Image 1 (cartoon, rainbow, N blue to C red):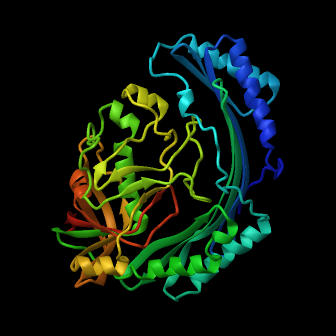
Image 2 (cartoon, helix red, strand yellow):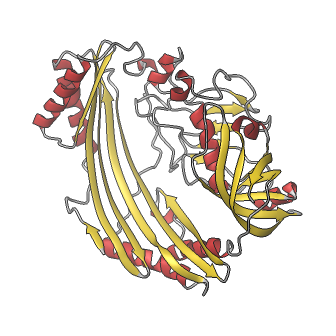
Image 3 (tube, rainbow, N blue to C red):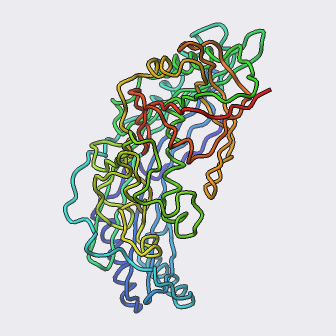
Amino acid sequence: MQTNLTRTGSTLPSEAELTRLVEQALNEAKRCGATQAEASASVAIGLAVDVRQREVDTLEHQRDRSLAVAVYFGHRQGTASSADFSPASVRATVEAACAIARHTSEDPAQGLADPDLLARDVPDLDLDHPWELEADGAIELALECERAALDADRRITNSDGAGVSSHSSVRVYGNTHGFLGAVRSTRHGINCRVIASDDAGMQRDYWYTVNRVPSGLEAAEAVGRKAAQQALRRLGSRRLTTRKVPVIYHAPVARGLLGHFVAAVSGGALYRKASFLLDTLGEQVFADWVQLTEHPHLPRGLGSAAFDQEGVATRERDLVRNGMLQGYVLSSYAARKLGMVSTGNAGGVHNLRLEPGERDLNGLLAAMGDGLLVTELMGQGVNLVTGDYSRGAAGFWVENGEIAYPVEEITVAGNLRDIFLGLQAAGTDMDTRGGIHTGSVLVDEMTVAGE
């Protein structure tokens, strides 16, 4: 058993303590002659347990803290950070940032967010739900999870482990425009990874649950059983011959497909002219039924935020309406590089939701008829400049709307522009375990390469 125990306390500092720290950093920046400055102070604590083969593998207590400072002398920026919150360290950190700024080149896009865009009314999004979980309790939950998987079927022959984690954090951000905002949040999870075996070979799969609220997690035993079911149904996997067929991305992997879209309409890719969706604002980029909307103020949402990492107020907005691109995903810097304004996305999207149709996954399978259901993707074969897409995959071959047999060692390929325009439907099997919410999606045609 490996252990990494840091017993430096199990509680977070108050928002007032971190606010004083941020204010000290901002005052030091002004004293050093900075024209603008911003600072962020954060502390996170956590407990993580992993077990394997019914024994404890790792047990970690974590406590991380950071002060990050950015100063601006006109349009010259300098940054520095420290894990030391002492007054002397704060002064030294700010002075280091100022020294860097004095030696950097002018960049007209550098600077704080527009003060008119900063959050003024901050709603309570109910993100903070600590879990009073001690190490012994976490170990028992993880063992229970793995035990349920190993006992589910005699063909579950090995385990890659089961884990339980609980994390809490507090962050205060402030800048010299007068903005100060604090966020307290939690994130908890249970996961299990197991191996199933038969005469044809071995298959690995997993399941997990994640939530801001402990009571919102699936039961540990249920997670273990689901992991076992996932692995068992992959036994007897075959390869396919190369063909062009309709493809359904199961909801957990469909999130990644939409993640490629987000990356392509994000400011960094756009101002570097490294996106296949460059200059497509107002144009058709998806099938005309597609609605993609950000919902940053969902209570307890894993992607919820009242303001972004620069203090810019978040708002509900359509990113895609009727298949047409309505906006980009921009921080203040990227927005200035493009001659636009921040969209409140410094740090990423906030609960981006693909509106579902009327069919569940079985309904999508029936609508597809014959084709491929993708449940796992491997590799990094995505070119955002051209949109070319090719990734290793595994899943199930579908005939007459029913799963026929599992498949492996195949590749799904196409171009993201064609894939997005070729989306036929989204399922009601919504997966909300992240900042992108989607059900399974049906693509009209892709190349499946195998034998």
